[in-house]
Image (cartoon, rainbow, N blue to C red; front, top):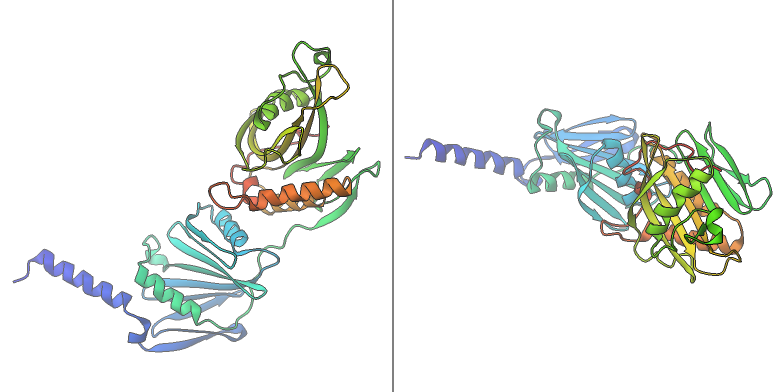
Amino acid sequence: MLSARLFAALVAALVSVALLAPAASARTVKLRGPGGFTVKAPSGFKLKTKRGIYRISGRGLRLTYARVPSGGRTPADTGAELARAAKATPTGVRSAASRWSARLGSQRVEVRAKGSNLVVLRFGRAARRAAAAQSPGQLALLRRIAGSARGGRTAQLPASIALRPFTAPDGSATAQVPNLPGWTFNGGSGVIEGSGPEGSFAFGVPFFGAIPGSFAANSFPVAPFPATAAEGLTALLPQFLARAGIPGVGIQVTGQFPGSEQILGAGYVSGFLTAVVTAGGRTASGVFLYGAGAFDTGVDGAYANYVSYAVVNQGADPRIGAALLRTWATWDPSRDQARRLNEALNSILTTNGGGGPIDQAVFDEAARKWSEYFRQ
């Protein structure tokens, strides 16, 4: 005679087998929805639709299916947006040119490129069992259902933030800047800078540093010539800001994009850096291109410094970071500088820093309150 424990285990196994049985073992029906949408699913599954989003549910499982215009987004871009919207940290990420997948909490999300659209899939449990994870068999069943989907209306992701042309007052530089209320822009001598409620940026800002004890130390930020870009940014930029009327800024470098040590060319100690910035009890994060020039400046004890940056405020629309990257890419103080900065921008977007390519998420993964700290 079976023990009660063994009998319970057998019952549980049989229930599991029934749930995981291939779709072919049950009658398959074709479900139809608005926009000519059809999908094949086992009998008992139901289809609900809302604004181009199709939900197929049954057996305690739910598949959410949507087609969205790519708008230039890659599957990885869209996956990152979905993770931020869900306020979830992706785990088990798999990313390729045509597909991205990850687990967000109890849900598994996949984004697939399909022509000019992206197909967004979310595999999960029905609401009453949302905490339970899917087994491999259940996930395979949901994927088979997703693979049978045809037609349907397209859903809409938020449109990218529009940019507008801006020219520095002296005509020395141009850029496409965010077309947002509350933003102001200025510039000169090749520099373009701007700030608004959601963030700020400045591209191409030069300044001098001075060797301690030199004649130049009377006029410029003082520190030994930096051995690394991180050393120079943390030692000199706060002093430069204090002289510009913005005291009490602290900068802690959190990383440098691999391979960017010579991004500004020979003669510079340089790099693309991520950093956390504190000022006035507030904290911020951003991306900085910094370099110190090891060449004769014509001033005793002085050496050249260069900085460009873009930052996004805490709680700001995640699209702001993408807009500032596009602004950076369009900054044009001269043809050669535009080429170099676009190459540098490409390094941000494509460099593998150990967790996958760097993308717009570097601007808001640790975003904190930021104001006009870098305005001159």
